[in-house]
Image (tube, rainbow, N blue to C red; front, side, top):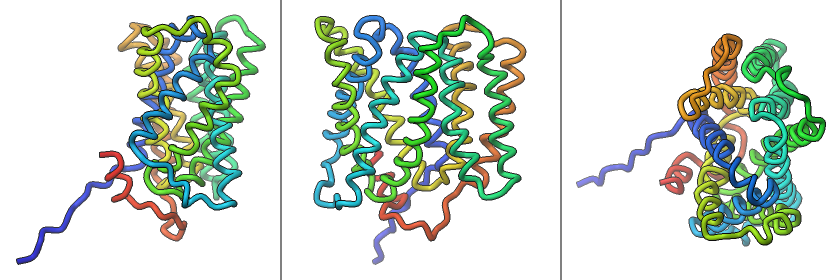
Length: 301
């Protein structure tokens, strides 16, 4: 009598990326009250520290699998994650969320443009950029040099984050890489975060930070790492154009903020760009990485 074979359903990488974007946007919106209490660096430190504890509870750090060539990438991704988190939270403290997302999106957009292998593929980032401009309308509001500077820093960091996350995802199975990099990110954020949060830590603040840590970094970091195992960095970078559209939709549904006609025109543009990017975004089978879909799904579920 033969035993039934175990069948697993492969989750499309674009679905994981979309779930990550939903979690990021919701977590960013809900972080604003916490930023007012403990500051952007304090919020980043609390979220990353509690997120690190969650990852360590879910999986053991694969310390024995770490080789000397892995150390720069692990440190780089951890430090980058901490700095990006602080920079983006500092940006949304000073400028509108839509404007911050638009500027930050220039990072993955650059990745998509540079890593594209054909001239035709460059049309998707261009279309996405047009949609993002219509969605976020960065010409509205008072310009804040510091806020735009923090958003630009987040853009550079986000581009670096995408490339390093793909490398770490190829090197370590499941979420093992996150058990190494997120604690480094928390330690990076602690340098400025602890002084900002000192004297403001209450049970309510810690409870709020714990809930936000699930939305960001736990869920999106895990989904992004798994998605980048099976997507090209160019496709992932362009697919991120959907994030401003998600922000507009969440603003309508949760915050009752009605989008303008220009924003409504931008939504189909970024959706089309994201669909076009992920349509040819599967990574080649020849790309070596130890993790497969079965291991990914086992660790998620």
